[in-house]
Image (cartoon, rainbow, N blue to C red):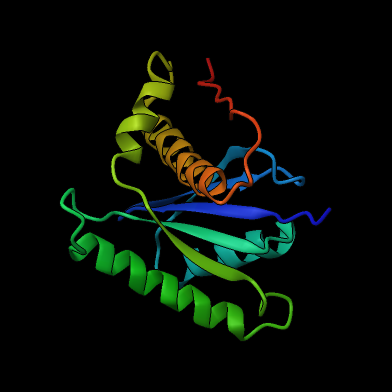
Length: 157
């Protein structure tokens, strides 16, 4: 059996939500949030890829509801291309695959998972980004036949 570690990214204008599959590739779990701050965000994502020994990065693309590629989607696709170039320069990450995945309505779905959370506004937004990244990754794994159990989320108290 071949095990693949996947990373899911929900790229927003202020933050990037990060999720990982478990080491066996069975389930997707929210992990962290990286602030968008220029070049530092890319370094942080690459460090996570190396630490977690990721084979595939799944980037959610916010297509418009009609399926068109709008400004937000173009920005995410450009960011993903930049990540691909950075990964290709390192021997440790040169084989990491980048996959783009439709993320329409994942943030709205993520809201349902954190309803009732007592987190303060900034912490709530951070958790929302992480859960959205997890839903993107879960959808990808499910469609690719890599998900064999339902992901559970905790809202924190």
